[in-house]
Image 1 (spheres, rainbow, N blue to C red):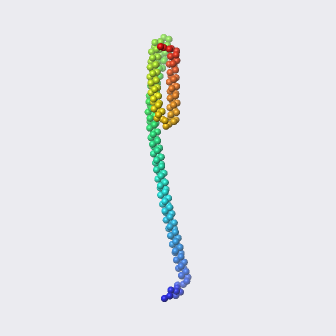
Image 2 (image 1 turned 60 degrees about the vertical axis):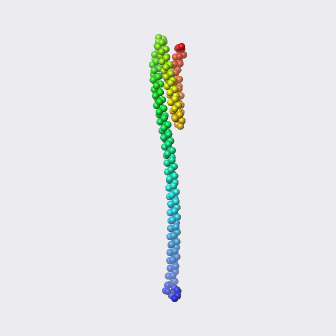
Image 3 (image 1 turned 30 degrees about the horizontal axis):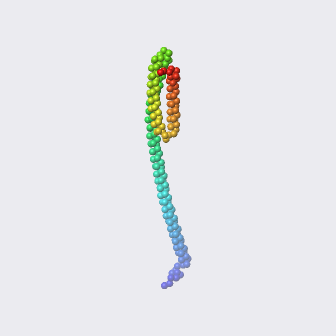
Length: 193
């Protein structure tokens, strides 16, 4: 039996069409396989990109958490320093109240000195009371100085507050010097043994 296509009744055109069809099918198969391969590569790249993005987002989240923890610890530290400052300012306020009472007492006693010509003995007693009050004021000033030193130690990290405290201490020293000036003047005018 012969395999001649002319004998089987298959024309040359049909054979060419079959060959073209087979080439088209194999080309189509190659295109589909290349698209599948390309899609697989793109899918793998997308997976890698998503994983890298998740890792980067995780690092960002960890860095933000560390930053928040650092800020929280600094805020707690500042809060404790401010609390210590409030305690010392309360003590200074109490000492200033004592100083005001002593100043009021001194003002009352100095008012008695208007009749200095006829009341020398009264003036001597008043001067003794003034000296006692001045000693008490000096003790109060020493107490204030101690509290100011405590405040200064607690406020080393806050430079602006430190500068303001220095100005306040200088003003207090000037006021104490100014308050002592009348007594020194009186001592010069009436030197008592």
